[in-house]
Image (cartoon, rainbow, N blue to C red; front, side, top):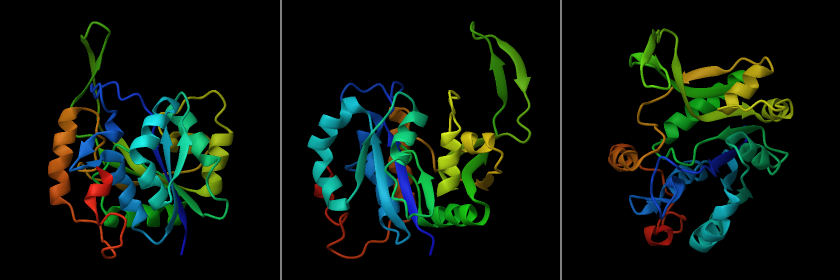
Length: 246
């Protein structure tokens, strides 16, 4: 059985979420923090041997106070983020256990995930070395200038919107980050593409969306009700007592 480390980036500024009390990964969703919903999807799997959450240095004191018990019980690793998403992931890569085969990166603010989808993307990564979820672009795309005037309509043919998890053979991802230089990628697959390795696209789901606004939080609450519940192992399972996670 292949083994996995999972990195959950949660060090962004959440500027579009517009909440003075919470950044989006720490906001409550169905009585638990958003990031805990994302984490639990991987913690229930036998092939996942390490889960790392990446937190902004400015959030670490609050995070430890609010979620320190969760982290200790679940055996999570907490890593300080960097100034960009790729810098945050790079910091986490330095803490990945060296004996694990694959690394998955999943947005902490993307909680509407099910085990079947994880198994599918893991299998694709094992087959090709690199795989991501994505969905085809369905809307009409407009290129707009600084004055909000349409410059052109862009063809959506062969365009897909990337999602997470994005999963890579461990050494492949380490090599991609080692060759990053000053290039700033918008996702991890872009760095793997730059070193010449093909990345498999696995059709994802519109339900697997990233929470960006408070409206997204309400949509996620409805989506979670429709998705299959994570398999629990009994009353001693760390997620059996919801009161622990509030």
